[in-house]
Length: 127
Image (cartoon, rainbow, N blue to C red; front, side, top):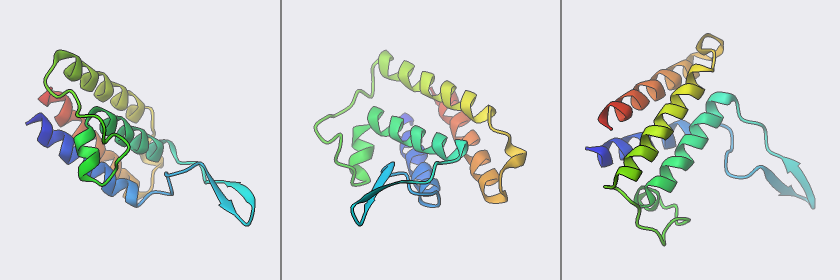
C-alpha cells in the first residue's frame, strides 16, 4: 500500500512539475555566459523539493522514471526508520504548504495545491 502511495505521489508530482518552470538547473549556459534560471514560486519549489525527497527515499521509483542518480541504491522500504522519515517528510511538506496563501494562486495552481494537500494527507494517514 505504501509503495502504491509513493508511486502515485511521485507520478502526481512529476505531472505537476512538467507544467512548472524549469527545475533542472539553477544556471544555463548560453553563448559563453551564465544565466540564472527563473526562481520558482514557493508552491512549485515545494513540489520540486518533495519530488526530490521522494526519489531519495525511493530509489526504485526514481529508476522507473528514468532517473539514474540513485541507481546504485535499493532503498529501505520496511524499517521503522523509513516510515519515520516518510512521516517527517509529510509533516514538513504540510507545514510548508499551509504557509502558502492558496487564494493568491492561479486557478491551475489552486488545483495543484489541493491535489498535493490531498495526496499528502492520504500518504500521512497510510503511514
